[in-house]
Length: 350
Ligand SMILES: NC(=O)c1ccc[n+]([C@@H]2O[C@H](COP(=O)([O-])OP(=O)(O)OC[C@H]3O[C@@H](n4cnc5c(N)ncnc54)[C@H](O)[C@@H]3O)[C@@H](O)[C@H]2O)c1
Ligand SMILES: [Zn+2]
Ligand SMILES: [Zn+2]
Image (spheres, rainbow, N blue to C red):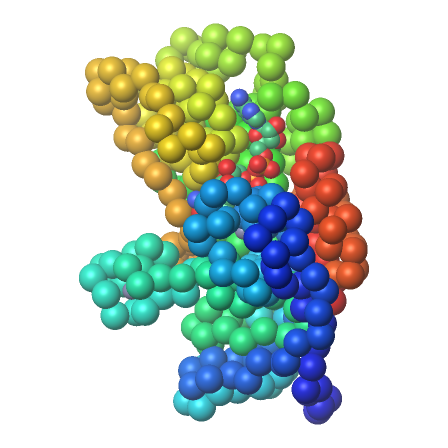
């Protein structure tokens, strides 16, 4: 067994400003009771990491300076805290980043992803832009057999996409995906994999991502030059889609979802909006009897079960979606690329 060093390299948000990260030598953490110590294989860059880089209001409220950030991660278990019987040294795992108490009313009712005492690994506490990290064993999820460790970190955004889609019907249904960032692109691919009859993929003007959506199986791709509402209606006999998913964070896209979902249909919203008081065409929600649902994280564990079923059947085209791999020392370059939008998912190797 390889020995565990005393120190490691880690990206810490040390200054409360745009950028403000330093790659520092830090202590390798020790696993507490119920935790595992993991040697990081790779961690992908998420939109949340861009908020933390930019240090917007949300980041300033949520991320203590000095935190090692990074939450979409995977690696190999190299240490076990007291009482851990579910894992062994050498196990390959990926992280569910919502840390739950497993003891509150929300956890008891099966909604641990919105635990009343919940925290997010790599946001509120140290995460995985580092060579090692500790995590509660229950959050260290074993991989489906055919998923290589190299690609395992994408289960966080893929899970977000599947959780959003499953807020409404997918099999044999008509589905519209608004916003083709990495999560929207995963949703396009997962909707096809789950048997959607028609998948309409919509971005503003990101040609790289619109092309990726075509490769990932979108039946129709729309952008700013199209009348989105008219186009969605014309592809659905004038009725609107069964299931609209919002991944853009644009208020325009949000109202488009409401106007282009069929009577009694489903609008599922994962996006975070810059303006807390985003306007919605409320009377259409009411009179058209829409089911509008906010989505957060991944259901623990039904989303993971559905995701592992799809991954085991080789139904998700991860390789097309991962457009860049970089070394962890190039994190600032990865952030720049992610902010440019000229990419799918970016993975950093450790
Ligand atoms: N609720 C959660 O648990 C959770 C978790 C992760 C991410 N998020 C949020 O989900 C959203 C998606 O994240 P991401 O990283 O995949 O996306 P992103 O921010 O990288 O991409 C958004 C895409 O939307 C497109 N867009 C902009 N305006 C549009 C419009 N009017 N119509 C259609 N498309 C438009 C952009 O061109 C871009 O390609 C973000 O808002 C993110 O903050 C939520
Ligand atoms: Zn994320
Ligand atoms: Zn709880």
